[in-house]
Image (cartoon, rainbow, N blue to C red):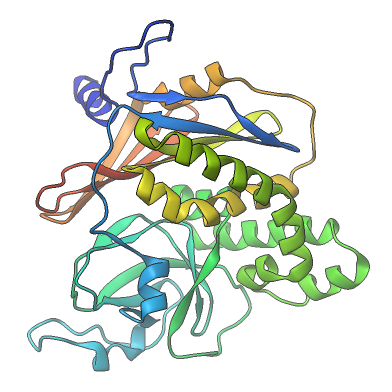
Length: 352
């Protein structure tokens, strides 16, 4: 318990409140919400911000061609050094290989979708890939039940989308392929039910979660929720840049479901377009309710970090990944261990 308390204090440093404000033990302050329909987003500002400009995102790396993702059996041509062990065997559902050819460390976030190969996959865990890396095993979950034929040798990122929280939760929390597939099918059925007959036939005709989310009719529904919130928050980010806007707490139908917090405003801005669409995708498949939730509840959600169990994985000198399980929540912390860092790049928290 003492160790858990120390971890919590390190994760959420104590800061002093300004006059007239309620002091926060988290180091984060939740602001008044932005609402659209049944989706509510609470902006979060931090006591401190970090320099994250050296880090590369998956979308940036794939667009530039410096990051290559491929099936497990296609790794031989990508090797840099002969002494590095070479993965053997053919393509596998829950493994891909990634090479970072850039001179920047690469951030991967759980929930990011890579499309192509024999199946579309979703990344299952936050991690950092070093600059100019040799091929690494990339643990993933399939989000396309039913296809096992190659569409391309390499993968691309679905730059405009991230898996919605319900799917991310199964990959990050349950870590179970069948549960991921079940959730993909459930969300596809819910999306289809909200469409007209012809659009529903198109959506039901694919097993690809990525293609469902990229369908024109589905994108129109998601955009109708995401765009007003995206514009409002981007405007707020610019206003709050000197106050370190770093993340959000998310509620659907008056129930808090998720939080994403980053090390800097710059990093938040890079991920914000795909994150807000993932939240909107969750909202459009959830029956609309009239309940509203306030700032106090969102602040309490961020500050409740007392865990019953912790699991820590680390690549020395690169990153540490901590999973905290508490009463009614799971939290995931990605800490950079690269030189001159030592801070949390991303923290995700889900309600259970």
